Length: 464
Ligand SMILES: Cc1cc2nc3c(=O)[nH]c(=O)nc-3n(C[C@H](O)[C@H](O)[C@H](O)COP(=O)(O)OP(=O)(O)OC[C@H]3O[C@@H](n4cnc5c(N)ncnc54)[C@H](O)[C@@H]3O)c2cc1C
Image (cartoon, rainbow, N blue to C red; front, top):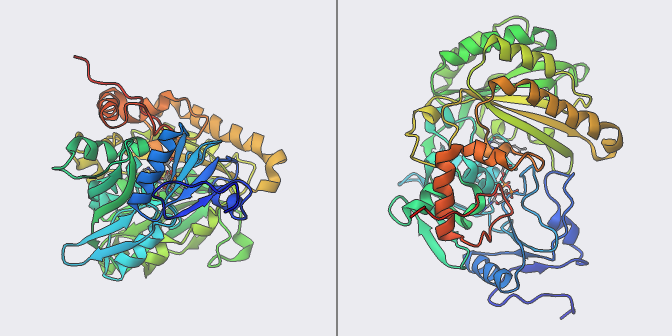
């Protein structure tokens, strides 16, 4: 055995150490600006491995980071000098078509889930990029195309298997450990390592009406006002995201339009194709679109349609906020700032919330953004080799854009927070009451704050 190989008692997976051939690949995260060097990476094969890794780390007082899909923009799935509990080998998904549920391992990606569930014509609400992890996305809430019809990812979670800070394996459901189950649904990775999720499934597709319609940047104010009306009256089935930036160089788009400043409304109709065509028609007929790719397509294809515009390893920096509404003033601010980025890869995305998200009881889960009408994430994106020239102006652009929206801000989605966001923004994401309740559950399940490499909730027992 090479001297550097670490033995974790009771562990069957791979242990990767600095100097190993696969160390650099294993520690790399989606956001290429993050460069963390863990003391070791424990690539787990199942819950028993996760429990062994937690006990090993605690006995040696190693800092713990948990890696699901590795997508968090703040790079919380990595750490310097500690142990990464890496779930990337735990990606199995099994569907029960009778009960209409899917059992999903903690390191699965959304593409894994869609692949298996769509084989049965079923789906559960997840994210909009297929290489994002189920783990982090779900634990923060989980917004995506199906949420207005079927709720957030957390609204569809029926059970989670969790390895706690003591290395115990517990099942959390509405009946078993209900406090933990509530906290997991929005409170992030603070309460343990989720080794599997069971989600409710719904009939979706396999063909849906979906895709982007692009207009020239000059039309931004008109398109946003039009979208405000359309979204205001939209049936729950219609999910839309507005994307402001440039036209991405997708194969389906003529090359002479690539990187031209433009606004897009991307839609996905979670219902029959004929109804979907009727619902998106007004969008396709509005003004003079530069490109119209909205139409019938496979749901799985739509789910991976923008994967290549946000690949692993590029440099990313995000700023985000929830918005109470799209007033004329907000529209003016968005239109004024969206195209000031230097990099043609940067963009802003506005998710239309509401529908089932807004109707769920406020105390059903720890996700606290249900009153927001839209949220916006301002994504500065550049290539690693452009770092010297572009990092400073791009990050400044994102901060200035957010600052301009200050008077219209109303909370923030915790999964969109970046590493330089003030820690107070975690409390902003939850509001005082939900944060206090989360801190109490944290005090019960992780009083020593073992799981702190995340959007941290500090343990605080209830006042006597
Ligand atoms: C390209 C891209 C697209 C995105 N699209 C969406 C979207 O459509 N909707 C949306 O809601 N969000 C979206 N996000 C944000 C996303 O929700 C967060 O980045 C989320 O943290 C990603 O989860 P992950 O497992 O890939 O991340 P990781 O970086 O692996 O994990 C982030 C944190 O989550 C915790 N964690 C992860 N897995 C587990 C687990 N199994 N058990 C316990 N803790 C765990 C850990 O604390 C970890 O630090 C997107 C992000 C990217 C980069």
